[in-house]
Image (tube, rainbow, N blue to C red; front, side, top):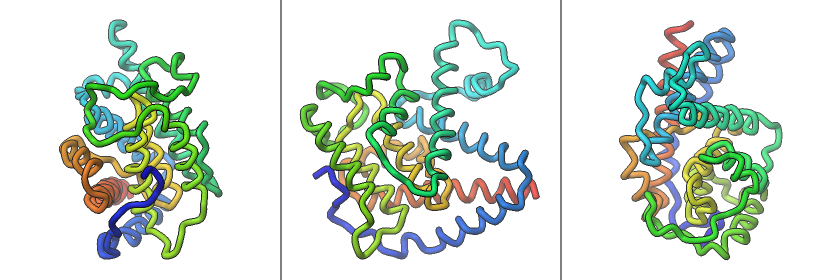
Length: 258
């Protein structure tokens, strides 16, 4: 149930043009200045933090985002914990790029643990990397999740599936990434960070294959929840659209900069 096996195959037409656009962005980035590329990643990261938090029910203001990522800002001490968590969230996306840029992509349980620590409200407590010990009664997500005593075994199976060569016929990387995320979310290993950890790991796969991170927007929150619960093809379509939106945003930014 929790391995990378689902009941539908997304039509190849869903991916038409996506690869060509990704190649165009890679070419534009090769010709961009270091300053422009840094600025592009900053904008993508801030967008990712905002929408990632919104998917979890936390709405951030432009002022909060600006203060958190402005090294010259003098934040209110009462908001220090919030700003620290937002900076840690951005560090997680730096880590997405670092892992995704590896010549060989290898998933480990420790990788998920490291993302969990970066997203956790209490990073010190999260160092143990312990999986949830109970099924939350009240949570934002309403899809089926596995029982706590099945988490460790299912996570080991998931990691094995990720590291095995893709079966024939091979899946498009975006579909593979979306299937992974939906599988991970059915395990839901961490009570508070599973959504963020799962989306970060999904984006590791995308970055490794030459795409930009798929940032699922806050306006798609209900659609995201419903696709996780009901339909793999619908979820893959959402990831394709989100990946496309990132490429579009990058194209506009880079063409203005060049």
